[in-house]
Length: 341
Image 1: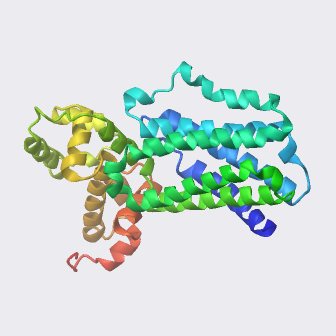
Image 2 (image 1 turned 90 degrees about the horizontal axis):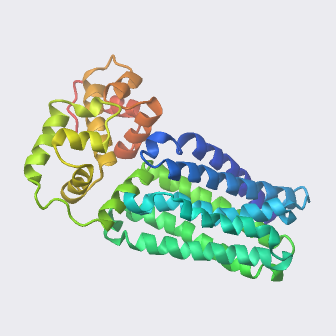
């Protein structure tokens, strides 16, 4: 058990570093700065817990009994809440206000709790936040078809969290290091499921946020000529190649079409079955496929930049997500003199 815990502690720390460098970037959290910052704080707190678990399980250093560990433990649930709320709530409800500073109360109160009750209370607090998450995800039930596999994987994280909460309540009844081994394993498994989820859907945070806006909002398309707007959208993409603009955003595209950003978002989800970020990536990938076939001398990097991706990593990530292979592999399978399938 301890060996598995140590292995997953190492994976957790590596995974946290990878997420910080590759996922929590501004392009993945457009207009969601608070979610990005709190996501970074969340993985930092989880990494801190795993370092304390390593010190206790491998070095016999009782970091898990320190005040810093206790405060970090109490910080996990509020950090997760403040990370999730901007993504799962409509924009006008998701802004972080001063009144939400009460989420820091568990961290502030942690040093004053009796030693024997601190950990159980921390996990009771965590369970309360999990109930909020379940309620927010239920509000997205009409969108579950768009995120079926991803929600299953994240559901695994949810059940791991529930299991940890239960363990926390009976922690004093477990052998000395068993609880912290199980807790370290749980955090490691949660990191693994998150990595698998983001591997399948790199832009999941943006797409979930867009879906949340539609789930909570009433229709704004009553007086919109949807067919005419979709025709104009197709013209912008096919003839004017608006996707080549690396700074193209939902509000910017909506302005070109003469409607609001919310109307465009609702129209895309209702009529095209996808959000803006997914639609834009698909348009860019279609153009990139054509260039990869027809312009054999062009480098993969130049192709990606030409169709609007800001960096090679973004291009590779989107291409693999949509086509299931790298741009180089696609080019080898589709030489110029061979018609695409």
